[in-house]
Length: 216
Image 1 (cartoon, helix red, strand yellow):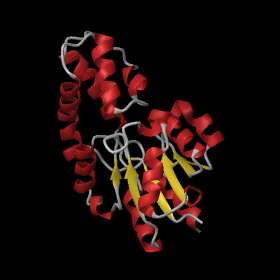
Image 2 (cartoon, one colour):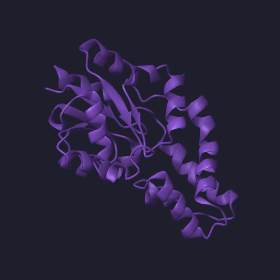
Image 3 (cartoon, helix red, strand yellow):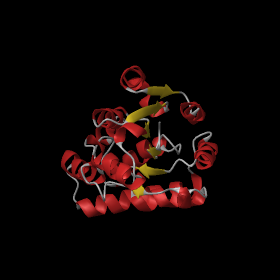
């Protein structure tokens, strides 16, 4: 029986992945990098924000600090999170369903805490989350199970009774290896990993609406 849920944010609860692809290239262009590779976001999507900043500095010989990179990218995407990014279809209805069932839930994300809070508040669901955990609290990111274990501790559940809902392959692998129940939800950004996600996840879903059947 599933007693708690850990949601990823970008690509899972909110439709934001394309924003990051655009912003990474915009940042590099404004810092003198001509024609940054289109696959640059794929190279850093498994990194923490600190690791990604260091990668940009080293890879493109940028004359700036890690702190500047992090703050500038946060500035570039802030308006998107505060004003534009929508929820994924059926996200709000799913939270209503979980509330009715008395199933607690929260978010574990690599996104900046301020941005995550902004988009959740705009959609009126921040106060419904039991937690919002980020790389700031768990700097090793989702390559390691620390963030998922910390979330389960807050939920008061064991891994085998906790559902992790994700769209990215590396995060699902980490959750599976840590003994969590996993549900991979389709997102365009992870379409290339569909076959592998289907293979390793307990459930592969085309939309958030399908999660309800896991509780029936």
